[in-house]
Each structure stands twice: as C-alpha cells, then as structure tokens.
Length: 211
Image 1 (cartoon, rainbow, N blue to C red):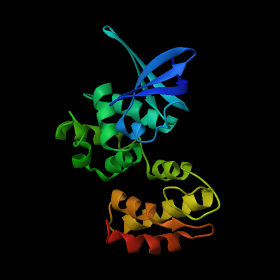
Image 2: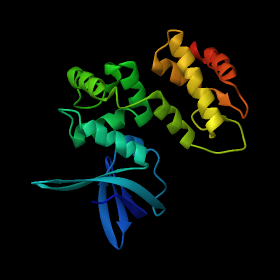
Image 3: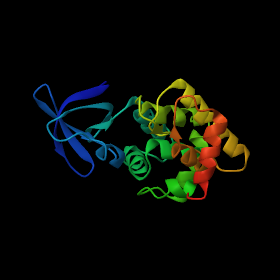
Image 4: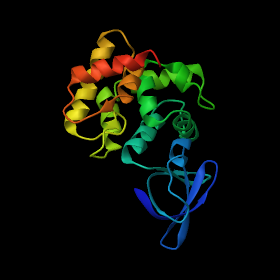
C-alpha cells in the first residue's frame, strides 16, 4: 500500500526513524544496517517500505533499496520469523552477508540475531536457499557503483567487472572454499577495467589467508 516514503530525515532512534512526508512525520522501523547508512538529519532520504496492518496497530518497515526490502519480505515467508525477527536478522547481518550465510549454510551466523535460535536459522537456510543466488550478491556489490578510480569488488560497477568477479567466486568454490569465503576474498580485490576472471581469482587468493 505504501511503496516508499521520501522526505527530510527528522529523527533517528535505536530501531526507528521519522521521515517528514507531506507535513506528516512517519515512524519507520529500520534494521541496524539501514541506520549505519542514513544521511544526516535534515537531509532527504528515500525508504522503500513494507506496510503491516495488525489488530493492535499498523507499522512501517523501511529499507534503503528495493533489494533489501525484498530480502525482508523473503524472511517474513519463513515459518516462525515475524517482522521483529526479520529486522533482528538484518541488524545482525547485512543483506549480502545474509545471502552468503544462506548459500554457505552458515546457521551460526544467522542465529546471532536476537531471538533467532539454531532451529529457526536452519529453517531460514532451508526455505530461502533456492531463492537467493551468488549472482544477486555480485550484482548488489556492483550497485554500490562508480566509475573512474579503481574500486574494490564491493564498490565497482560495470557488467564486465561483475562477470569477472562472479566467475572468480565460482572458481574459488570449485577449489573447495565456501561461498562466503570466496565472496569475501573477491570483495577485497581492487577491480580495474579490463580485468579477467583469472586475474581476479589470483588476486582473491592472496586475501584468503587473511579471512
């Protein structure tokens, strides 16, 4: 019903922000991963929202991009995970890290979220492992884009670089590394235009001993 809210950021609290929209202050609940990336008070912010209506009231949950909102909605589809639990998971793990935890079967990382036990963490992995992919993670990194100066794999843009990074991750997993280990190593690589998957792979291997 409410796809997004846009306006000046007027208040920040532990798990909630207030955005002025049409002379109305809207309370939007957000995970820690959003709080860490918000602009300064008074600046305009756009939050993509999920609107929940319950018998005891209505709530808005907000995210800085549509992909993160989609992850939140996927979590709500897991039996035993409500909005509070989903926010807790996305506060303990950034969306990309959550995807990597799901792909690598890392229930321990997911269970670090408040109120999420080992069984629920395993259920998250089982229910969502077919709904996330390594390509989504790589694409998300590239959306933190920019051109010109060399950037890390977590910041670089361009379809060619995205493809090389994705192929390097696949090569590392074929060598026996987990998806999470491979992705973290590739994310540390300083990507440059024209780099091949082999060059990204060699650079990533140098970082694995530091993970």
